[in-house]
Image (tube, rainbow, N blue to C red; front, side, top):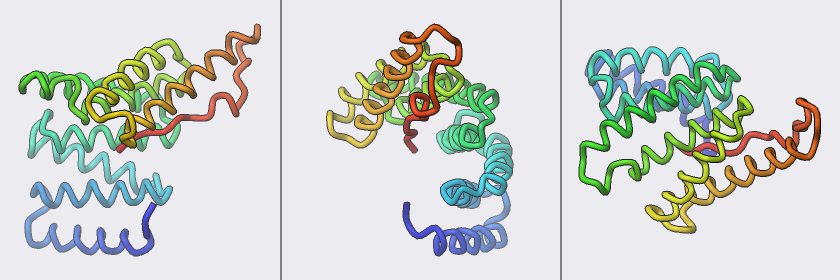
Length: 200
């Protein structure tokens, strides 16, 4: 995961200097703020990560626009932080909005970039994770299958995102099998419902 103990102070110092030199809403300042929030999240400090992501998203929407790639990345990162904090309602809402915007924005480019662009695929994977987390295994598996097929096509069989997508689909299928093998609503054990992996 890297040396977060040394990275976080560097991000904090860089952010402070960029705010002083470039201003609070300069794109480079916003990017550093997003990176610092990601470092906090990676360190497990969601209490600092989530408010920082929220502030960065608000400013990115105002300065860069709702569908700018950096705004979309920050929105997706905030959704991942909500997911990590167990706030699945807000996570799913943001994942759905981000996915729709990725597809809308990227669909305007050449056909190669449309719904198979890596950002779109990652966003689709994250939405599937949220569906999985709330127990909507049908929608999760459908999205995991579509995303995996596109990862394989676009990135190749051995790319880390492809491997993560394959792992996620296996988790979801295992959870579905566990649910089908029992007759009660509480059939899936904690082991069976272990969350699969996200992608950045």
